[in-house]
Image (cartoon, rainbow, N blue to C red; front, top):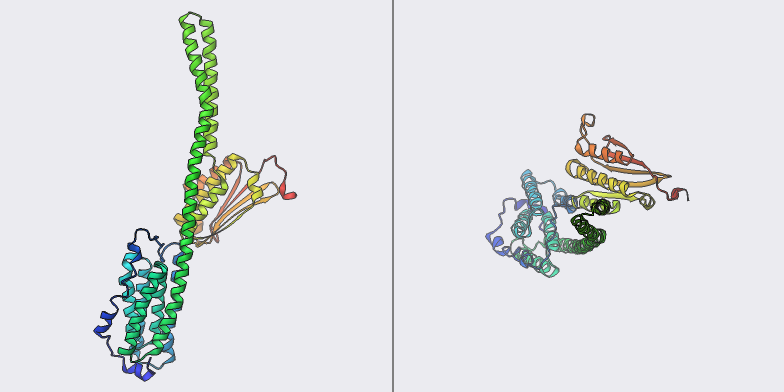
Length: 412
């Protein structure tokens, strides 16, 4: 870029129409991959766990003002124009990271034009180009991204010798910044694709597990009901024949046996259904942890395996439902960013604590709704004590005295 005097002389400089003609292809390849049906659908940078990082990275965009500070004193008009340009960039960036891939090219071209326009008076415009490169690297394959960045660099190279009068600093800074942030975007894409692949594999395993569980349920019900129903059918036919032969006493005996078989079958079916409905506390915690993380919350889970080993089926079922209810409350009402869940064993007392770092306004006036009332009722069904507090952060503590016949492993 030219000297400070040259910067001031260009205050009223306007981008030529040549710029619009030369940058019209910058976003041409951005959407190429998304048109391919086989291309993966990338999570938006402005949603979920990526939202916090995407907004936090705007801190580095403040380097936009460094050349202006170094080159002072500058006319107030320059500061106003550059500040408005920076605010426009931030608005475009926030809008872009929340848009589907098909809508990105127009936003990226607008950001590029804005960086070029600001660069007439401020070399810090190269900072904006780097953010464009990161978005390109994240949403596109390496080949498509390199092609898009190459087009952008060619446009800057042409502008360097036609509009900016050999502004080598702008060209070199834009090139280095773009390559570095494009690399970060490509690595973030690779990591995200790896996570998506793992999620797909986990989903496939869940489907296979569901199929295996259905087959197990079918076998169990067949084993439970098959023999009993056959016996019931035979005894019913025998009772009918005895009645026809006027052997009422023998028929009464078969009817009583028939009633006993029916009651035994009903009890066995109830037990089988109870086993089917049983929830695994570990699986419930893993499922809720993944759900919270998908919604942008960080989860810190500490689980003592010794405590899980001593839980009865009913205790595990009720604790799993409590964790599920607390997770639902967090997603609905919490203003926090971090959730901590601990499950510890203190001698024969299990202590489960669930807390998030949100701040509750007017906690003294809060009335417990159906969710927390349900938590207390489920805890009471297994003789557990519950304490709920909202200051300084929402927290629920469940203490359960274990009646397991297993030895006190905490004392070993």
